[in-house]
Length: 616
Image (cartoon, rainbow, N blue to C red; front, side, top):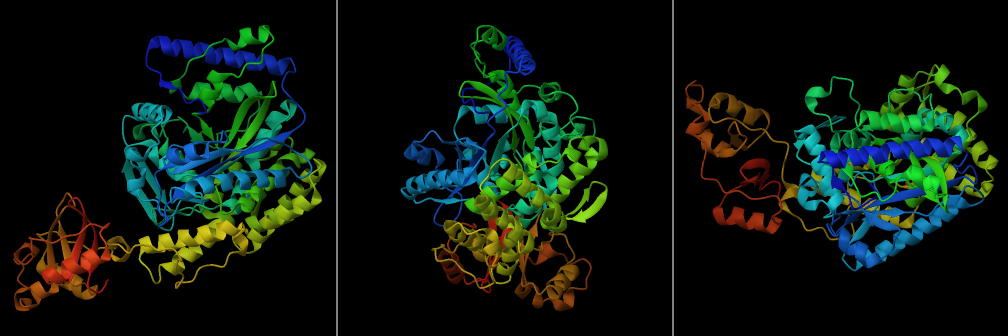
């Protein structure tokens, strides 16, 4: 979706014009391939860096456009969330110290972004999913105010005709309905690009699919979403569901998700992959197209295939085929979309080098992998890696093998051979691939985040734990030491930054509640069993309607066994409540001035927490 000036396909004329341009682009691509016009050498690499903007409390900061204007550099562009930005790095020829050069450019550009962000009291965080994101940050109010994002959102919603039903189950469970594609704004990635020799494209693409699971397992860095511990790489599940154009009632048919791993090995030509995407997924948006691609070729011009690129930008394969023009020459590349952002720049370059090394280090015996390995094993490996990270057991060429053994004993030596074959500096290869080795032996990003978060929860409530976690992650990122060298945070870890204590930091959100018609006998026993002094009373709409305190019922113990006694006879209905964004001082004053020991925490009429004098 690199073209900013897009509109929704609506009229028959628009649709007909777009389909015409699309088919002409396919015809032009076929012609360029058949006539040996696609660039074969040199091979280049490139990358896109997405990153998060956070305020002094490490919460999302919604000022992307202001910072983008301050940066004033064409390498930078927007993302769908107004708390994210993206860097498009320059292509580098795959040789010598290209990975160090890429690292150096990334450091310079992120440094430029940091200097601009400082003027707006903003910091930059590299992470697959920002731990401090909450539901309020993914509302339409926080969509970057640029036409293409609203057009895409409208088109996908129109296709679904219903809200997005998100369900991800890991250690915890996330189950929610959402009304826009803004959930996609939770994801930030480091997208790696590798130019591919056109004669070798299909074999390379199938190999990219086969190695996706093992590569992802060591790169995972997104285990937390809204404070819940889900998959090792939760982005994989979240992205798939957040831009799904299929209505829930049709999920059982053969329709494929727009975000997918694919269903089969590729056996045709490069254009067959594009043709399959066009056949499966209807175009959502269009733009103005000035020239016919076939006519351009006839006139000696190289077309940019804008209609095809626009359609391709709304189909999100984890390994995506891309066409581009550089230096006046057309080329083809594979874009690796599954690697997350962070935890450090060095980790990201190491991830990219590992993947590129494996891609160019493919053995002859793997050329016809699709004949010896079941595609469903490759697909199963990928989703297992997303769920379990370094704990994954892979079905690899007919054998079950753990990720550590597969990476250390087979894949890393293959990556080294591939890199040396391409003339990569041995010093560079050792520098970055050692990062992968250490991650396998110690911990990767997801493992560090989960271990640290669990420790913090022993002494802190969820919101404070997430802010302390993000603050410490930021401090470690600033040194660019790989995540395997980071010490896991203990429960007493804190932050050197000032975090204003609010109700959300100390309230209890793991709640028991009752209905006003519930038996008082049952409720009194629940309060005894769970040592609860204040029991919220809610109705069928989950609205808070009352509060029952132990003080209210302890003088009526003798009456409790009377089955006619119910909660509504004893609960208070005139309630003093508070919202989660209020300060601790506000809560203290409210309790003291009203001589109460408990404040229900509400969002509108809904109960979201309880704050007691013990919490304070």
